[in-house]
Image 1 (cartoon, helix red, strand yellow):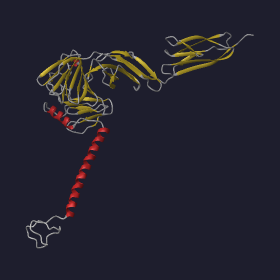
Image 2 (tube, rainbow, N blue to C red):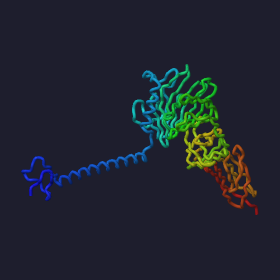
Image 3 (cartoon, rainbow, N blue to C red):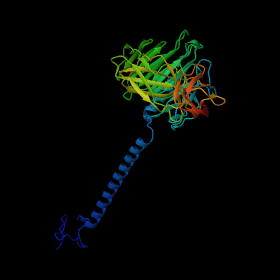
Image 4 (cartoon, one colour):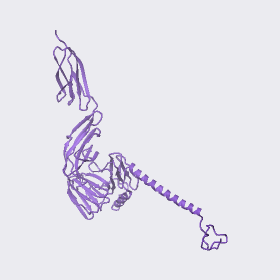
Length: 453
């Protein structure tokens, strides 16, 4: 059978050698199947590669600390650099502003990015952070940027700031300029030095906070929080600050705060929640222990509208070196993990995500004491004829004292004297002193009572 031009033979065979030039040749079925198989294989490879890539991203998110997105970081860098000019290279400190700060790492999960790079490296304690550098804390990280002894910023967890060249210098005032990309910072700038900080908030609508008192009468203490939705809360505890959003400026005084949500031009000024009344532990209390730290219970009574409270424990009165910072549901918490040392602590009520006025700071001490107390005892020199004998001595103050199993009260200086009952014959007289940590010291001697027949 011959093939008609434009038609395929019914038996599926190719046209004969004499087929006209205009006739269409049908592709071989084997070649079509091989091409379809290769296409399907490529699609499967691409799908498997995509699945593996997503799995790696999920693993990195769970295993490694979270970080701020690159787009958000680069946007903050471009915004900050476009508004100011970098000073000449080599000028670490200018006469009118801080060009660098010393970074104190409060734990091991703090990262630093040098200016002009995109690589985050673990930050070293005491490193100098310069203009254009970024500092980022992670889920468990906290850090302090100290501009001098009285002027500093403390970064909370999951926070990122970029140190900027100072803009709009005011005479001889020392000004720090930073961009807060995410997280929360506490700041204190001493008014008697005329220090101030210019804090730009990335993601907010041209929000700029200036904290500091140019008159030098009082320090400024404040806290700024930037949420993941780019909301912003500013609380002022002392001094005064100015918040500029677009063309509008707000003066925020002591015990006031401003809460600005996404899309708002600027919020209104509100009063901070009152400070809770602290109930325990007593100020200056000391806990001594031999092996494991004791559980210290912190209790307070806060405002009725506050369902949460924030407990902060630090090693210094300025609360720069913080060792515990947690939000607590209720009005008490017991901590048994504090290492030995001197501490200060305070608590504040939390309302709408804003920390209220803190309570007055209280002190406490945890002392590791594994040294037995000193104890000197005077026993009778020889046999005793009376039914009672006198035992006296001296030990450390505040020790519990036991003479022949009976508790005895020592004087304020540790001296004691008591009469112990004797049986006829040999009596083992034991005197034991036990200090507050549970360490004990004992002295013993056999005292004989002679009975006349």
